[in-house]
Length: 281
Picture: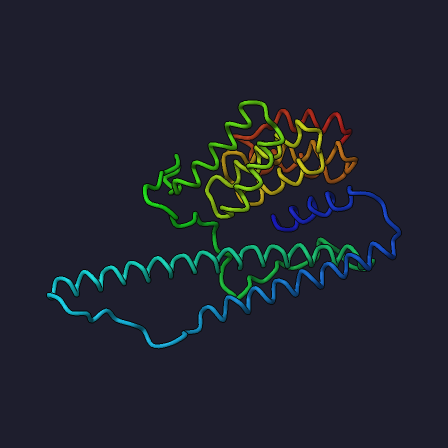
């Protein structure tokens, strides 16, 4: 259900870019959908190839004392464990992103078919089967990782890049801040700060008057961290932005989700006020 709600918001943002002839819009959309499905398939095949072995395992057997050989084996085990965990996180990220994207594509295809009922769409099966993997923080890329308030680890460069973007934001350099936060989420897509970075990117873009881009940033913030600290505000700002873009129906649905999803710790009063201004039923 959450994927369909996010797909609806994403579709509204796509449609808000401007009108186009109906036949051309359908053709372009179908072509885009085919291309996206192809990209997903290629990515899955590439990951499968990475899981294949490329030769016999090499076990350190160099000269030295028994202690030296044990230390070498421990170092090799540590290296292989890190590589395995990194690959597992990459696979989980692709499975999660691919499943969500396929769900979005199914929604968009249904929108193009007159007889299709969006409400009757089944849940999208998880790529490869099983449960949808939860978002995970990346392995520290450098020594000296820093823990966030929730206990997740940040690499030194990760914290440095985020702080640089925050400094630009605090100094009122909105364009620089937007660019730096965009670079941050591209460089660290699994970061525990991704939700906050996308939200702050939306705030910077809103300040610049780029409402559609800000809305996409708020949607990205909520998508990557639907239960995070910034999720309620991101959902509220997404609804307000959709209203500004003339997508009243989608704006009302989004603003209504604020109270449903965050009745105790969300900006419920602000959402109700925004709904009243839009004339939501």
